[in-house]
Length: 391
Image (tube, rainbow, N blue to C red):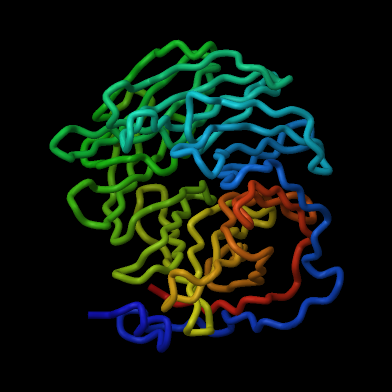
């Protein structure tokens, strides 16, 4: 069996090919290279995080996640709106929700966000909340009451409604994809607990198409395999593709899609896979530190403005799970074959979301146990060396 140690130390066995010219050598950056423009903390509680950061249409940012005091069992969802310099303009607490995971901006500059409540021990209930442009609650909906359903993604629909996605569970442990469409006022239009046959849920990512959507989830068959499905506007499934890795994100990419995943075989390693418009694999690469004592989580995927991709997460010593993590962002070329730079920002925590701007970037996550929003210049060098493995 190929072990994590085998892959990280040698890059041999199934991960056989190290792509030529793909290794960016870490070197000490100069003062302007990747420098932090501003860095803001947004809570004074013990454990807080941003899980999603959005660039607002008129400038500034939306950041959402959860915050909890040290004596709280569950967190409390919250949203922050900032200006272009990261200065807080308003903040909204969403006490019904323990963690907000995703959001989409509305045409009037407000927000629709989804997340989950954990008010009944380990059980989850999916929630959605509509927010006005000035930061007040417009509406909220509890969309499951069985304790076995969760909402993870949201996207806008051309007719003014919203598509919410997640997973639905049954008492015997089976999982299925869950899709809900709601009107602009949050009223439910359609609620389908077994939305896509073969998708075990939860839905991890959704991309809207001209005549439907492409979604990614798990097969639900007890394996770590992922599944990509093309769903028509009427809900019929045009095709599905089973992948040999779980999927954490999907982006439209030319005439196909780019998928991210955090595992390959039994190895914790981020991976990008390009598929065509019918799900056939074009290329697939994994990214791992040159330093064999480190691993890179890279679970968050975003598009860069030049056609490349951003992977975000943390780096850590693979043989010591208690060691400090370093929030890390890596830039990958459009063909997946080159890591252009990889940089760490802060100690302790992880980057959960990154936004590409014109000449720089903004990231959000949990850094030093605090919800942080940070903006930095485009790096030209790395302080983490990653090699690329053809998988």
